[in-house]
Every structure is written in C-alpha cells, then in structure tokens.
Amino acid sequence: MTTQEMENANFVDRIVNFFVVNEDPRTKSWFLSNTPGPLMLILVSYLYFCLYAGPKYMKNRKPFQLKNTLIVYNFIQVIFSIVLVVEGLEGGWRKHYNFRCQPVDYSTNPIAMRMARAVWLYYMAKVVELLDTVFFVLRKKQSQVSFLHVYHHTLMPICAFIGLKYFAGGHGTLLGLINSFIHVIMYMYYMLSAMPSMQKYLWWKRYLTSLQIIQFLIVFCHTIQIQFQPNCNFSKSIGLLLTFNAALFTYMFSSFYIKSYMKKPQQVKNDINEKKLMYDENCNKLNGNEKLVEKKEQ
Image (cartoon, rainbow, N blue to C red; front, side, top):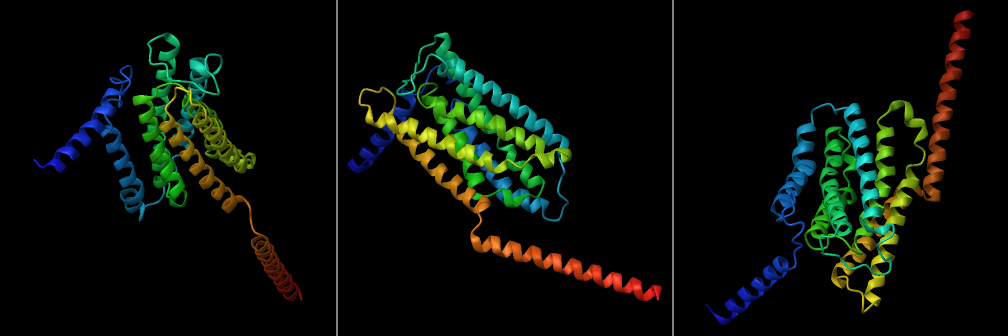
C-alpha cells in the first residue's frame, strides 16, 4: 500500500470513528436508529415511486378518491403532532431549557430521556409523512409533487435521523416543537379539505403557508445566535447546518407564497378581462336564447 493510499484509508477511518464514537448510546438500539441503511432504502423507494413508478402506474387509470382514508390519516397526524408538542414542552422547553443556548443532556435522567424519546417520535413522524406524497400520486395530483414538496419530505427524515443519532435533545429540538405545532394546524386543514361539506371554510390556506415561513425565520434566528456565543456547548456545525436549512426553506416557501398568492398587476388585469369575456359570452347566449323563444312564440 502506497503512502497516499494509507493516508486516504486513515482519513476514512477517522471519519467512521468520529461518527461511531459520537453517536448517542441511549438511542442506538431504537427502531430505525442504528444505521442509516434502512432509512436510505425507504427514501430511495419513496423517490422511485413518487417520481417514476407511481405516475407511470396511474397514467391510464382513474385517480383514487381516498376520502375516508385521508380523513383518518390526517386525523391521526393531528393527534400525533399534538403529542409531539406536549412532549417537546414537557421534555424541556416549557421550563427546563434555555432559549439562548441549550447543550444536549446525554444522561439518562427522566427529563433528558423524555426529550430523547420525543426526538425519536419526531423522526418516526417524518418517515410516516412520506405518505403525503404517495397519496398525491394515487389521486393523480402530480402538480402537488413539486420540487419543494419532495425536497422537504426527503430531507426532513435525514435531519431527524442525524438529530436522533447524535443530538437527541438540546438546542436543535426547538425546530421539532415549532414544526409539530404547525403540523397540528396543517393536518387539520388537510383533514377538513377531504370533507366536501367543509370546502367553503378553507379560505385560510395562504395563512398556513405564512405560518410555515414564520417557523423557519424563528428557527433561523434561534440557531444562528449560538455562532456568537463561544461558551455555548452545543455543536456549532450542527447549528450552522440548521441555520442554512432554515434560510433555504424560508426562501423556497416565500417563493412559493409569492407565486401562489401574490398576483402581479398584469395577471390580475388578465383575470378580470377573462372573467368579463366569459360574462359577455354568457349574456350573448342568454340573449340569443330569448330571441329564439320570441320567434317560436310568434
């Protein structure tokens, strides 16, 4: 073996050793927590189905309605999200954690273990939420399977796995608490949208997107502050990763909001002209029918 090969081998060994030595022994044996292999298999299957196999299978088929399935699924997600909010608060953020800097407590005391279990539950929630996209595909709502949607749903389980494996507690868990609170509202909206009788009450979708943007801004501010605290004993690199991720999602969700809810003046003008044209056409048809009736009567 050459000197270069030995150096490369030592570098790889150091990387592997770093991840093995620094893993959280409390969560190592928990479901889907030991190695990233099972999660990667799930995510690859998810991407294959949602981007290729699913649309191909549904191409010449009628969309599944899944009304009752969606009501039950979203109801379960609402309850699951409420549980995560409660566990996040009672596991630290209500009275035990410091919002300026909160290191990870790797001990087995009840409070630390409660937060660690909350992180695992959050990880499980992110895996289950992959079904959101599966349902879009089965209902032939492929326009909903946007880059933002797929990127968000793919990245979140990976981030949750890293958190569970190495940082099951501490500063970064505020993200999970806020995100779970938003998901209580979001899945409530989805549940109501599956009920035809509730459609007229769903005017507030744009405000849900606004809440998502606010959540990322809060996480951005909360995580970037530790970079300016030399004595904060929470991983600066993980804090930087969370900050970057929050900034990226703020940009992506803001772009989606502007595109979806803030029409340009020309677009508004075109919409008005289009509605006026439809109105004129309907009036002409109505007048034509009235004249035809008059001729028949004569």
